[in-house]
Length: 319
Image 1 (cartoon, rainbow, N blue to C red):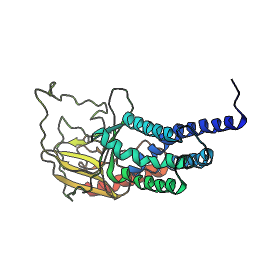
Image 2: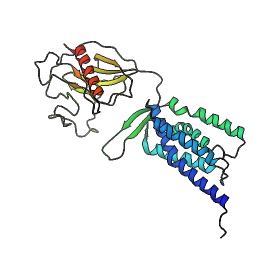
Image 3: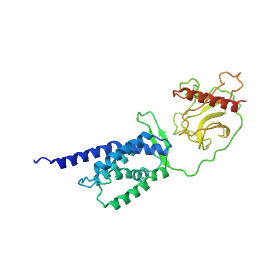
Image 4: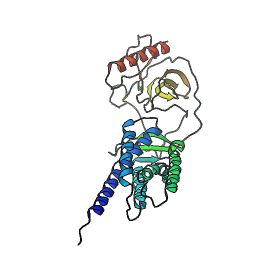
């Protein structure tokens, strides 16, 4: 068999290196950046990784003449992005609808990286690049990443993706007071009264098919990943309402808001439930104060800010 000449061997090396960079970095890096961007999270290192890969790939692929003139690469891109979505996403819509919106939003990346390979004249290549760039806004415009799901199956958390809602929920302002009466079935903090995740004496039906739970009420709330702290007839939680991070109190029996404490703080969503203090020491005068928990993050300034939040909230909720 005749050995390859230096020029074809160099072209083959360039082609293999370009394929490794394209499928080893770009689908995950750009897909992760896009999903984070849709959640309001900014990760510059992912954007830098995508930009660096493109800067390397454009001259590396320019002038290459693979057998399918890049069409195999384009097909491989569709397969790679589709596979990632199938693996990590839990869509609220049919999967084909998610793929029809999300995958075209990523094509501009591979089209730009292999711009010098496509079997078209330069104006046509640039025109299609403009089309793919315009389609790149489909996913952020039409899809909403609701968050992550996690269970006990051992699999990594999956992304919950749905259609974007263009109407915002209408939140009710409230400035009442909660007169707490502690009971034996209170759940006043994260993981329950003893921090074990166990509520002694709770009675729950074992067969939800024969005796399903009955919905008592439903109310729109802001984004948040934390649960509720419950004492007596009142439930406390944290939620994000546009540019305000709120600690809210709802009446358990009917879901009516009792009071809302808001701080101007923009973040993805609160991730911890509040804790109700004073329940174990009924002599305190601030028995209904909902206290923000200390987050497990280092830094003196962070802890001081949380203590200030607690003091402001105590003044608001004091009886």
